[in-house]
Length: 403
Image (cartoon, rainbow, N blue to C red):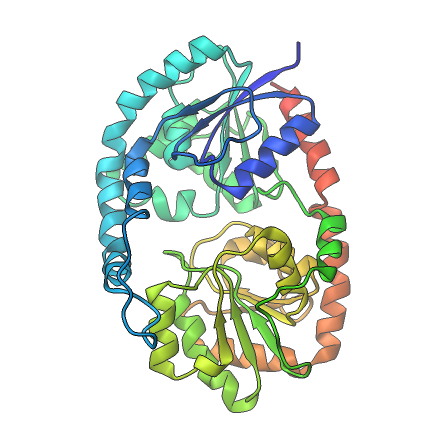
């Protein structure tokens, strides 16, 4: 009988779905413990819901009725209130989320006893890895690390620090999407004698599907043929410098008055609407809802520049995907992204806190078609060598076999 893997992850996530598909392609049997309630059934043998750290409450809040203000605001009072309360909610989750672990860990032990997996794999440290840290010693436990697990979440308070250390000490193997996180894993208690693997967390680049997306039409995208197009694919995140991005736009428009900025995942986000209104850039910024994958890739193909300014990151899947679509990447100058971007060769690194520096980088890249063409060729070769989905799958197959 094929090896049975119990995956512990956010079952709603596109990354989780990609991971499940990849495990199936390797002929593993897969069961899923989702830490969030699901509205659609993933393609797995068994599904269990353990809403650790109040994740179910978070989902319920999204179902609240909305009261729309006038057409110029683009937002509503309830969403605005939630937006402003988010930092407080994050702090409370760090404080209270760990208190929910013991209850759900007992349930997880029952699930493990019932489903009898050969291997347990948690797709990030908080709170999936923390939940999985009680996996019986005779069952191998793998932990995937995301770019902000150590640099952001683990340092939130003493309890989060201790739990992160426990996860790393229990882990039999670690997967990360940057080498920096393997080094940090050792600092947090993961033995240097245990196996580790660095591969893109989303399973790699599907070149054929991304290329096919060129032919997909985004019905909401009708742009002038000569307009410089800049895409920000990161949406609104706690560690994304959304303010720096928006503040750079008027500075770009001084030099490139017909530039257009595309913002997937920002429609109806109060923070985005407020910046657009405050800066008077409505005619140059398009805020989109979350897009289907093929429409998103089509949008990337239509853009010349991608902007991803964050203070915490590993290897963002959107970074690799925009590079695969030919975008010239401009990203925050942080350690993890230096593993992918060589300034002036295949992208630019800028201060995550400086709108002027970001604007100058955007203008420079738009005005220098030669550097963009060279970067496009360089990035294609780089992605084939390090991020091709078939290559990633083969590396994962060898890694899993060790356990």
